[in-house]
Amino acid sequence: MYTNSGFLKTIWALALVWVVTFPVAAQTFPAKLVEPLAPLAVMDSLDATGLQQWGYVLATRTYALLAFEQETLVRRQQQIDSMTLAIETAKTDTTVDKKTVRTMSKDLKNLQSAEKAAAAQVESAAALLERCSAYNSSDSAGQAAALPALWAGVNGAENAARLRAGLTPSPGDMPADSAATSPPTVSPTAYVAYKPEADPMLYPPVPPCRWAVDERDAFSGEVRKETEREVLFRYTNPKLQALYPDRPHTVGEATLGRTGDVLRFDLILTINDPNARNVFGKLALNSPALFKLLDGATLTLNNLKGDEGAALPDNAGYVYRAQYVLDKTAVKQVKKSGLDKVRLTWATGYEDYDIQLVGFLQRALRCIE
Image (tube, rainbow, N blue to C red; front, side, top):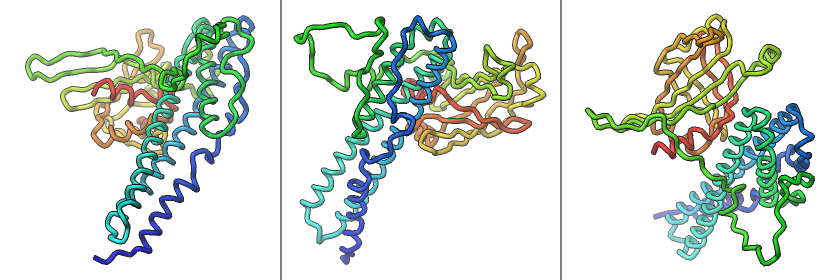
């Protein structure tokens, strides 16, 4: 069989270009994170505004970190694709000795290990962003209690990323002037070997699976499960900010349910506006929802249930419900990357919402499967 060995050399060279010319360490580090995170002030000196400002700072820096980790993962995947193509081509060329193929296969395994580590970093950053979202939705007392640990988590994650990127980490992983969060003094004999896999800053604990419904149908025998509702996003149009100083204009909650083999993704939208029906109209049957993922991919789902909205008990707004089915292709997409934004099509137009709980579907899928 005739094989173009020159073509093989070209393919192999391209694979090596990805590995050598585009190392992850040469990746551009986010400009927002070049300067280390500012030290945390003494907690007693922070008022409600100061606590909110810290929430904004930590969330925006964590979002930049998540984008950096996602880019790292994509680079690793590109390297693997190039090396895989080179190996497949080499196996069909009788002029290439088996030792060369084994060497390439070993390089591929190293890249796959690096990809697994990069995927773990993406998941860790997404979980940290969820903590930032929970902080920003808390009251002042909850924020004051959570801020030291959240600051330490963000600072530790940034330092770990700086080390992986070949940069110098910022000095110290804890606030310098907050006695309540200073590390305890221990004797040298108390130290143990550091294990990255045991570090909650790198691998935060996964929240437990919580079910609103977990039952088996007595007639059909099908198992029906549905996760508890979680806040996916809160949104207030900047032009309406003065009218909503204490609460968001729109709150989007989500659940994931399964009956038999059917996966249902439900959105529950609470619009705190008595004129919502006039402004938005309804969520029509088959109206599309366009989800943008963190890796840049898009996912279009069609609403299975039209809804004109139900008035809140105080008539101060309306609640809308939309339901989407996740097929195998959609599940494969959202498992690879978290949610970033959603564009909902209303009767009067469309509205874009930034999703704060970016890892909701990934975590819910792990639970429900």
